Image 1 (tube, rainbow, N blue to C red):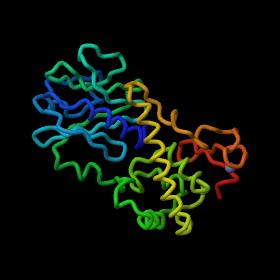
Image 2: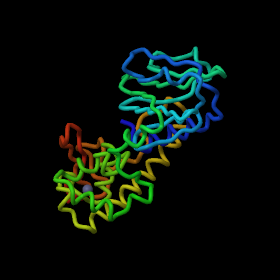
Image 3: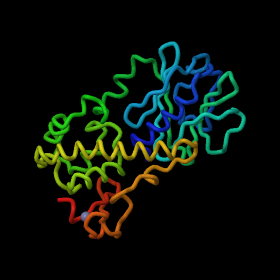
Length: 263
Ligand SMILES: [Zn+2]
């Protein structure tokens, strides 16, 4: 699933397609893909934002489109609306002939349109953005005191920090030397501070590698360009100590970690 770095890279790629023309129409293959598309025609796309793993297309007249890419989605601009590949699930056509399309092989991505006053409520469960001033070591520590869950599950909760998913949560825990099964509430202040720094470091590294990979649309495979230490490396030697990386089920997903480096 695209996490913060991938969604950020998509947002940056879309911004490069500005200035935008006016939306003239919309379409979708399944009614469940887009909600409220009828509010789009006649509006201009004014800017592109990201909140957590969500893309926000700000539209003229006080509306916005929220786009969640889910597992395999990509949002991109086609030079000609008529040349849509089969994997395009929903689209906005523009009056300059271009189209903004949700290209999504697994068709799990979702678009919904909202008046801007709905924004706070829509994102009320999202925690601080990792690169915002609100995301401090103290805030992360305070959050860890309020949960009874293992560190990895706590870290993937979007209310802890927005935008972290399975890959970069595992990598941050490795960087910080924390066992993903350890209850978050029992981590010392010092270890949470180390984790805070590891989250930023991992996301910065991922952003740099993903930006390079996403310059071309369609190159959408998170983690593929990131120098992973543990994610997806079950049975392979830890890059730090040589012990075999382990995979365990956690919260319905696979967690990868080094049993020697992470305590
Ligand atoms: Zn190790």
